[in-house]
Length: 454
Image (cartoon, rainbow, N blue to C red; front, side, top):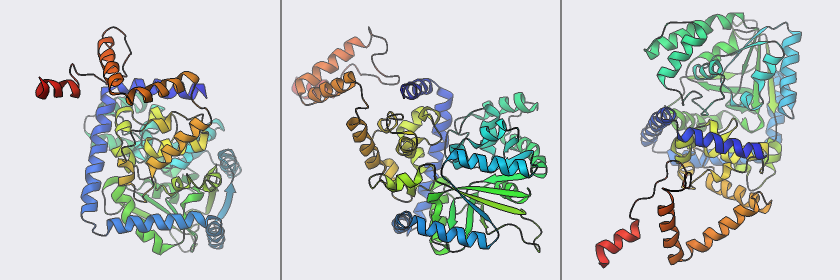
């Protein structure tokens, strides 16, 4: 618990001094936000769709077990094999055993935050399998030995020069400055992997209960290769991904891409219903669908926090969060970052173990304003903060400091004295103020007095 707290503070301080990282994140996230605003400006029914999407998710979570049973029955009728995994360890064992008994040596993967969540790559590599991420961003961070920094753009934190240098070091290619050339290098390297792999792994954006269909949205086409070329396809699907059917899917298709990247729709929308048929020219011989719990059933029982299960993994909340803009994704210490990570990680890992994350927010509300399913993220963070206090997750000195701060804020005289002491002490006490925080020579009150009361 202590090490997790120290890790967050250490990574946050390091990120605050990384100008390249902050520049890369700022450019990309601002671009995403701008594209989102433009996309919704041309969707007059956008707000109504968000309300509808929230209602669909609420009903799907409420009736989750019913829909999961319906989905499993429909998927198995189509020839898929459905397995319920209580946790990540069980899911990893299932895939390891399947790969071993099937004689698989190489695995290719489409982008999946759920497999990041359970540490699947490390488990498979430790078991002796070659594993290759085929999403460009995931491929980059795999080469770098880093976790994803953003939900939809894993390598968002890296500059073009850093990627070029990485390819020189890891792939032995010349130093290329052209982004298209860098992309072609990755494409050529990965193309042969699709043909060599015996197993392809993906996540799923949605699971349709009425048809037993999994839905995968992407922009690169790599997920289609990963789920089509290998003989076996395994989809790792969180329980919360199940929705009633096609009519509900239409609502989310209008919202998800617009929220994530400002597109009207993702470039590739794959609806996978069972393994390949005998009369089809492509498709896997076997389709295994792992329905992953890993704590989700417990979240569902929490009336105050269950709305976190509505998340579509669009990343919009990260793109508008002032805290994420400064410290990036790695500081959050786990798979999910930004406001949604601050709300979900304590539920996955334990409130006290990740107690710093709910505090890493200004509560400005920008995240709730852009969420396509209207998750009340500031309310979730406040709930977690309250629970941390109730569990005495703060040390005695922290509680005393907060009480002193509250008393000082309630007294104008004390407030002015504290500011003056901070201003005088900042030059003599290194580290008195957090990195990036400055105190002007004259605060608002002093400027007001000089202007109007002298």
